[in-house]
Length: 329
Image 1 (cartoon, rainbow, N blue to C red):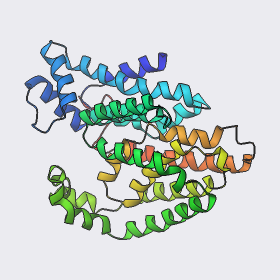
Image 2: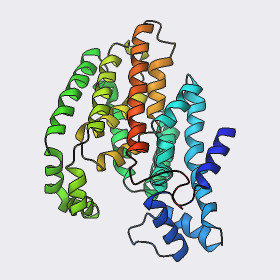
Image 3: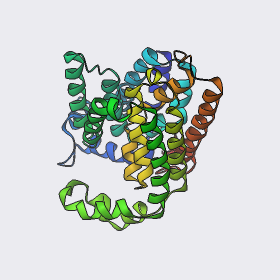
């Protein structure tokens, strides 16, 4: 609870970090919102603004609602709280929230709902749908992750139920990581489909978007390759020690990295970042797998830290949009 309070205040009082925060401040103060703005977020923002609350109060509320649900799940499900909090910072979800706060709020709510999901409980499924709708009402892009998680959660036992299948997924991940790094195949397909998604066409067709989306990233390639190797190693875990619910979001995260459609892939992957530390902590510290050698765990540990360090470097050093805490004014 202490960590939640501290991180809430540290984020909520951060000032104007990143271009998105500045935009949200303008909406808040001018009471002028785009027609396409998601209604739940719009309602929250207007409620606080019209009741005279300073913008930083609204930021504090958003920060708390982002951090608290994630930490509740970490507390309930993690095998090692120290390590999972380390990964939480290393994979930089918290720092993303300093700018793309609307997206990270939606991601936190969706992650909480997904991690609470029990396919055998109608109540659990109903709550997952309820929180999923709230997430979509905050950031509509979460709809695609919501649908993908539903599909993977229900077909995961078939897709990921054998050592051979996981090995093939890992090998194909390596092959496709290199293929998409060398081609613009996905970008070309998105361009051909843009008329079907008019709300997103500007993210593909503008000169700036084209430059970003066709510029291949060595950093993203490294993350995709390490993730594919981790999947290969996960195939060596006994079936009874695999957690499909945690593995599925990691699999989806690696798919986004493999596709090399920066920055769309990066932004979509943010929705999965709250769950990634749980899966990786499970791989390293879940002691129920007595048949998993310590040597294998040490190899996984090294790869996890390497992968997280690259992600941290991408976020903080390469600095998507100059998201620097307390440096934005």
